[in-house]
Image (cartoon, rainbow, N blue to C red; front, side, top):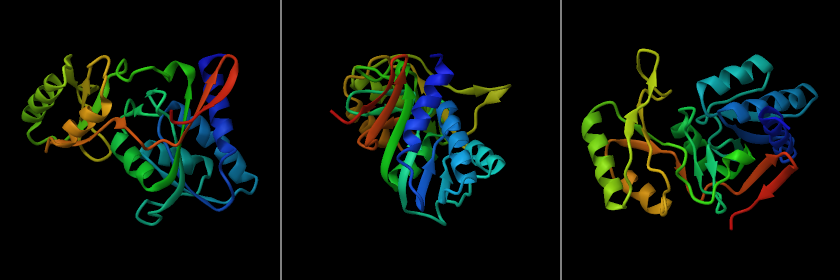
Length: 231
């Protein structure tokens, strides 16, 4: 089973958790895109849902495929969010934000009763941190914010390159008009402590550590699909 097939299998398994009349948060990324395509087929067959997208890219794909959408302001309480992840550990702590939508993804997930993560088995880890940690930051005071992030990391025994994410000839800009710092910390022994330290930095808008948010993970591999619950 190639990586695309694994993503489709995980997305199909997650779709089984979607019921008629649900208010559904719809994630961003390559695996979430496969979920949208399968969801659109169900909608065309009569499934009634309200979708709330986590990015402009997801919104465009949903509208192209006929998935009905509302904004989170129009539908502020959701039954379920289904989204991908860049890393997931045994406690269902996540690193997200490789696609740059982490702020909206976290807001939508937090507005949901449940969050299901869909991923292929290459995204599972014992300890978070092999994937660069995205940190969404305000453009104002960027240099000062990066220094504060470096200092917070040092206090926790973490180090590594922290760079502004680029896109084309300039910095990548999120849907919210912010920049992203990608932090190559490597292994993060205490993700909760790092999350709190980043939350305390004024210039940090949000970070890609999703802790205590996911309720279920559907992981696809060559041997099939397995379900993970928090350990």
